[in-house]
Image (cartoon, protein in one colour):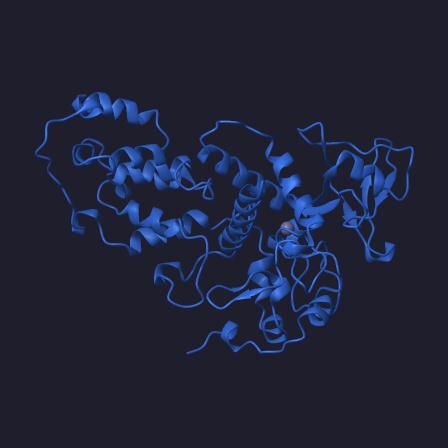
Length: 377
Ligand SMILES: [Zn+2]
């Protein structure tokens, strides 16, 4: 049976309908979500707790962009929360259609400074409005990607985020032809994964309530641990899973000669991906570095196995009854999924919390954007 996403009209009037539905031409360029929930077309409760993160946003840009895009309060200086000297990150901003799309931040004396965001300026960057949650997730993606690079050079994640978005803004070749401000092709739809953001929903999907998961808080996910438990209980125990124990006929070499106790001790200092890499080096290390259920559980709970899963409740998942034979490897494998196909997804992921689904979506969008940015640098 077809999913509602497969029923898309071939020629849906995307641009005009999205604009109408959101009652605004302004959206976060990372997630595609709005900064307010005004308007009459929503069949949603704008006071719903899980939607409140949409109201929490900031302005990001180069310091010079902040000055160029300031439309009031020329003598006032907004607080800069950036950790980089070259980047401006405002305090919490607000927005109202009444002011024809200007964004506002407070100054140190209780006054207001208004900014004209995402306006084009010849030979300069712009000021970009982003949800606080989207900035946070983007910075986590960058920090993770930096740990996987070999040069060990650490750069401010906010600086990289700003540079990536500014480059996209300047380079029209990356943009969706349908929308000037759509820096990350959020108005597009994949046949396999469906709409990339709420901007790509058609009329039928809007009224079917499919905006809900795009609007759910991607940072605070109250049912995340419960969902991990459900996967655990729905998976067969480890003792039922066939184990491979390859044997090597050659003499042990290098680190393979170390006693098991010492290798165990070394592994306690290594991040989970390094242990997995060590496990795969040779048949002998396959046996000396066993990736048993404790390894998967501890790595998952520590947050260093899956960088987008940093907030499982350790107390809830460290119960003795959940330790010995449960298949934590499968839990990790399923939680590793960040893009969910419309069909043919593992049934244990059917009840994924909306917040986790949204976090994974934003994470994938930014991972793709940064990979592309690095390949072009
Ligand atoms: Zn956002």
